[in-house]
View 1 (cartoon, rainbow over the protein chains, first blue to last red):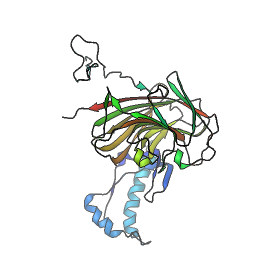
View 2: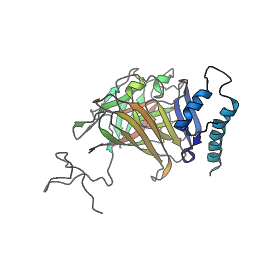
View 3: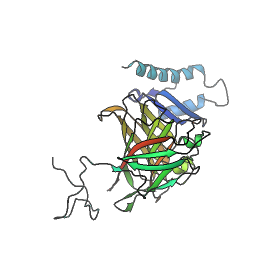
View 4: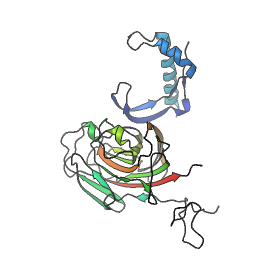
Length: 80
Length: 253
């Protein structure tokens, strides 16, 4: 299974104004969670994802990223 | 530890002042160059005539606005297009033009007058590649930013092209930023938000990640704008801010 990592010390709570992947403007107070995708994992992730399919990626693959991001956010939120 | 002058103040050569000459500029307690937008060295680009007057006193620039009846993303500095007022001039150090190939460290100071709360405001200051453009990715401004919603907390942060990362706090009073660009690339902007006693309140950074054409003259650029797309400004609304900078061009072996 493909994997990702979170740079936990760099998770931060800030206000951000930027452009989303679809070009839309983002303006929000947010946790910014850096996701590290190892170079050797990129082919597997690219294979696992078809942007034109609403059922892609598979739930199991999605969960890898979702859990990593949510763990990073949760740990940062619980840190005084 | 002795304080070592960085360059000859007369010739600009490294190694401090010539023997028998005057004192050099110390890098310890280095003051910012104060920005006086009325001193005649700055050019104002204001495509939609939003600036009524600008004045300078006590180290602060006061910008009085004309009416902005309909808000737009064109005035908030974080849109694709930028028609917000901005003052600019060539970025020179001791008379030498800084270009995109040079390694530049640009220190910045932004300090807003806390009593000025007329509208949802924004101030951006830093370097730019082409401040005469109305396209954000052509202007390519990298520096520090101040925003404030009415009388809410002062917010400061890092600005890169048309994006920003900011922090706010009730005690925020000013920000000191540092920009590193060079080698034909716009690098990073970092910032410390300070309280009235110069104690750090918040801090952060943002990367610009943008290539610049070789041998391009760089500019200093300070601009004003509104906070949100729909924010309007009444005639006579004003903002008051102290702006400072100090540019260093490194000699790379």
